[in-house]
Image 1 (cartoon, helix red, strand yellow):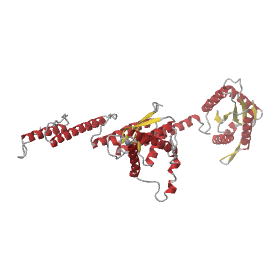
Image 2 (spheres, chains in turn purple, blue):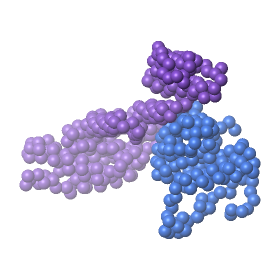
Image 3 (cartoon, chains in turn red, cyan):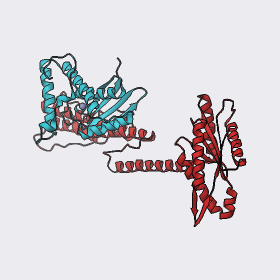
Image 4 (spheres, protein in one colour):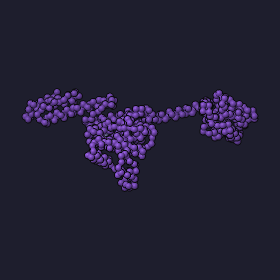
Length: 313
Length: 176
Ligand SMILES: [Zn+2]
C-alpha cells in the first residue's frame, strides 16, 4: 500500500486522501487483484470525478483483456472477446487466425493438402512445410502401393497379367456377362514346341521369345481385352463384348503375326508358331472354369491337328 | 439500360462496359478510397431519402446481384466445396477485395462461418459499434446460393466497425 505524504502547501489533507484512494486502486490493478469500482462520484470537482471514470473504464478494459488472454491461452477460441482496448483487437485477430487454423487442420486431416497457413510467422513456415511433407509422403505411399499392386498382378518377365489376376478378371467378366446377358470370348494359346526352343537355344532365348510373343499379342488386342500368362508358355485372353466371329479374326490375325515373326537374339534367329483355341460364353456355362475348359479342348484339337492353327469350340 | 423503371434486377455484366477499350491509358485499377467514397456517399444519400432499414435492404440486394454476376463471370467453375472456397479465396485476393478464411464448414447442416480480413468495404473505418457490411452479406449469400443451387443467406456477426479486426459472417440455408 502506498501512502502519499503531503508534498506541497497547495494540497490539503483531503487531496492526499483522494490520491491515496486512486493510488491504492491502481496498485491493486497492477498486482492483478480485482479492485472493484473506484467511487469518486461524490467528489465536488468535475476533474476528480472524471479521473474516477477513466480509472473505472481502464479497470473494466483491463479485465476484459485479461479474460481474452486467458481464454486464448487455454485454447478456448469461442470466447467472446469484447474489444475495449487496442490490445484486444490484436487478440481478436489472433483468435480469428487460430479459428481458421483449426478449420485448416481439419481440412488437412480430410486430405485437402492445398491448405497453407499465413500470418503466423515462423509457425506458418513450419506448418506449411509439414503439410508439404505429408503430401509428399502420401504421394510416395500411393506410388509404392501402385507398384506393389503391379507386382502382385503381373508376370515379371512379360509384364502381362499373372494367373491370379487373370482368373479374377475372368470370373468377374463371367458374372457380369451372365447378369446383364452380355457375351464374351475366351482364347487359350500355347507356343508350339517351346520346350525345344529352350533346349536348343537356351532359357534366355526362351525368355525373349515369350516377350516377343506377348508384345505382338498386345498389339492386336483392344484396351478392354485382358491377356494373362497362365503357365510357362500358356496364355489366355478374355475379349469382353466379343462374338465368336470377332474372336476368330483376332486369333487368326495373331496366329499369322507369330508365324511371320522372327526373333533375333545374339545373332540367332528364332522362328516359332502358336496354337489357339477359342470359345464364347454359353447360356448353360456354370462358371468361368467351364468356359476356359472348352477353350482348352479347342486348343488341344489345334495341337493335335498339326499345330499353328486356330480351332473354335 | 440504366434508366428504365424496374421491379426486379436487370443488371447485366455488359453494364460494366469494355474497360480496356474505354480506359486505354488509365487501365482497370482505381483506389479503395474511391470505391468507399462511392459506397458511403450512396449509403448516406439513401438513408437521407429513406431510412437505415431501406438502405440496408438496398445494399443487400445490390450485393446479391453482384455476387451472382461475380460467380458467373469471375469465379473458376468448381463442383466440390473445397474447390469453390479455394477459387473464392484466390479471386477475392486477386481483386484485392479481402482475405477470406473459413472457420466452420458444416456441409450436413449447411452452416458456414467465415471471416474476411482487410475487407474492401470496412477495414480501417472508425469503430462505431455498428456492422456495415450489408453489401457483403448479399454478396456472400449469392455466392453460396449459386454454388449450392439453393437459397443461402449471410449475416455479419462481427465487423471491423464493431472493433473486431475481421468481418465474420455466418452463412446458412435460408428458410424459404
Ligand atoms: Zn464488416
